[in-house]
Image 1 (spheres, helix red, strand yellow):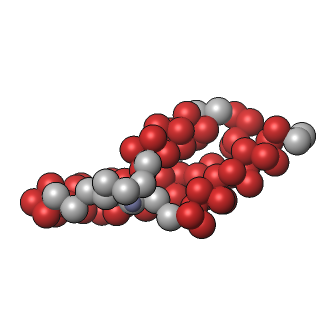
Image 2 (cartoon, protein in one colour; image 1 turned 120 degrees about the horizontal axis):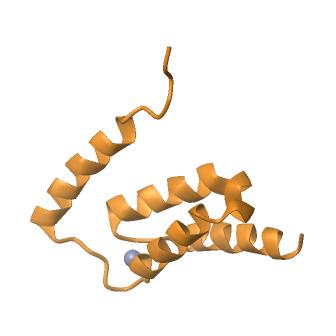
Image 3 (cartoon, helix red, strand yellow; image 1 turned 30 degrees about the vertical axis):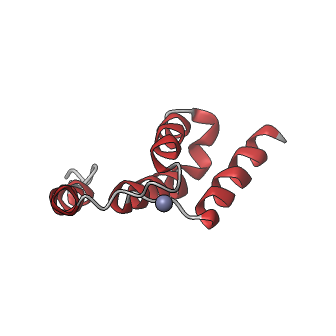
Length: 86
Ligand SMILES: [Zn+2]
């Protein structure tokens, strides 16, 4: 029996992407695109494997909303600091 990666998340992401294209509600006042780039780098880094669920969850939220919150930036900074202090 195979229980590997269900495509659930991809289906949801596709429908959000289609909707946001129509609305063009991209945020101009925060650096969400930069943050996605950084997060995808961290998700590929095995030092950050312990925080993968958190990081990929934040990344998905940012991709859907085209926005990043202070709280999320703080969470990312805390995870990076935890790795650097190791
Ligand atoms: Zn924003």
